[in-house]
Length: 92
Image (cartoon, rainbow, N blue to C red; front, side):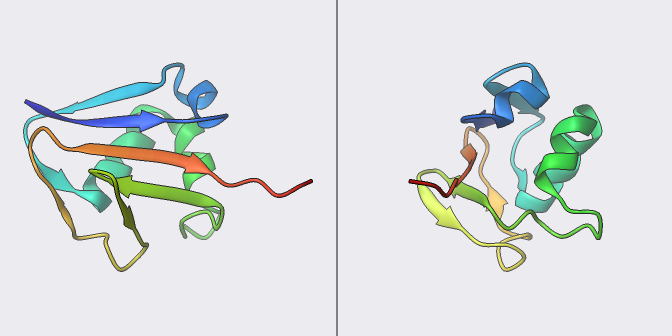
Protein backbone atom coordinates (compact mmCIF):
# COMPACT_ATOMS: atom_id res chain seq x y z
CA UNK A 1 0.00 0.00 0.00
CA UNK A 2 0.97 3.64 0.14
CA UNK A 3 0.32 7.04 1.65
CA UNK A 4 -1.78 9.28 -0.59
CA UNK A 5 -0.99 13.00 -0.67
CA UNK A 6 -3.81 15.15 -2.08
CA UNK A 7 -2.98 18.64 -3.29
CA UNK A 8 -5.71 21.28 -3.38
CA UNK A 9 -5.74 24.64 -5.12
CA UNK A 10 -2.64 26.09 -6.70
CA UNK A 11 -0.33 23.46 -5.17
CA UNK A 12 -1.48 21.01 -7.87
CA UNK A 13 0.30 22.93 -10.63
CA UNK A 14 3.67 22.54 -8.91
CA UNK A 15 3.39 18.75 -8.92
CA UNK A 16 1.46 18.36 -12.17
CA UNK A 17 -1.17 16.27 -10.39
CA UNK A 18 -3.72 16.50 -7.63
CA UNK A 19 -2.57 13.25 -5.97
CA UNK A 20 0.83 11.75 -5.25
CA UNK A 21 1.31 8.20 -4.01
CA UNK A 22 4.19 7.57 -1.63
CA UNK A 23 4.84 3.84 -1.89
CA UNK A 24 6.32 1.54 0.68
CA UNK A 25 3.94 1.72 3.60
CA UNK A 26 3.60 4.25 6.36
CA UNK A 27 6.02 7.12 6.96
CA UNK A 28 6.34 10.19 9.14
CA UNK A 29 4.95 13.53 8.03
CA UNK A 30 8.50 14.87 7.80
CA UNK A 31 9.63 11.98 5.59
CA UNK A 32 6.58 12.49 3.36
CA UNK A 33 7.43 16.19 2.93
CA UNK A 34 11.07 15.36 2.21
CA UNK A 35 9.99 12.89 -0.48
CA UNK A 36 7.55 15.38 -2.00
CA UNK A 37 10.30 18.02 -2.21
CA UNK A 38 12.72 15.49 -3.72
CA UNK A 39 10.28 14.33 -6.39
CA UNK A 40 8.82 17.74 -7.15
CA UNK A 41 11.35 20.52 -6.41
CA UNK A 42 8.92 23.27 -7.48
CA UNK A 43 6.37 21.92 -4.99
CA UNK A 44 9.08 21.74 -2.32
CA UNK A 45 9.79 25.41 -2.93
CA UNK A 46 6.15 26.18 -2.20
CA UNK A 47 6.04 24.06 0.97
CA UNK A 48 9.15 25.49 2.62
CA UNK A 49 10.63 28.96 2.79
CA UNK A 50 14.26 29.85 2.03
CA UNK A 51 15.28 28.93 5.60
CA UNK A 52 13.68 25.49 5.42
CA UNK A 53 10.66 26.36 7.53
CA UNK A 54 7.19 25.29 6.50
CA UNK A 55 5.40 28.03 4.58
CA UNK A 56 3.11 29.93 6.97
CA UNK A 57 -0.01 29.62 4.77
CA UNK A 58 0.11 25.83 4.36
CA UNK A 59 -2.78 23.84 5.83
CA UNK A 60 -2.29 20.10 6.47
CA UNK A 61 -4.70 17.34 7.36
CA UNK A 62 -3.65 13.77 8.17
CA UNK A 63 -6.56 11.38 7.75
CA UNK A 64 -8.93 14.35 8.08
CA UNK A 65 -7.35 15.73 11.27
CA UNK A 66 -5.38 18.99 11.45
CA UNK A 67 -1.61 18.68 11.70
CA UNK A 68 0.88 21.27 12.95
CA UNK A 69 4.51 21.88 12.01
CA UNK A 70 7.01 21.20 13.47
CA UNK A 71 5.05 19.52 16.27
CA UNK A 72 3.76 16.71 14.03
CA UNK A 73 6.92 16.25 11.92
CA UNK A 74 7.52 12.82 13.50
CA UNK A 75 3.85 11.80 13.43
CA UNK A 76 3.41 8.44 11.72
CA UNK A 77 1.07 8.35 8.76
CA UNK A 78 -0.24 4.80 8.66
CA UNK A 79 -0.05 2.66 5.54
CA UNK A 80 -3.10 3.61 3.47
CA UNK A 81 -3.21 7.03 5.13
CA UNK A 82 -4.17 10.30 3.50
CA UNK A 83 -2.49 13.71 3.69
CA UNK A 84 -4.27 16.78 2.33
CA UNK A 85 -2.25 19.92 1.59
CA UNK A 86 -3.69 23.30 0.69
CA UNK A 87 -3.03 26.96 1.38
CA UNK A 88 -5.26 29.54 2.90
CA UNK A 89 -5.60 32.78 1.00
CA UNK A 90 -6.58 36.16 2.30
CA UNK A 91 -8.74 38.60 0.49
CA UNK A 92 -12.26 39.70 0.29
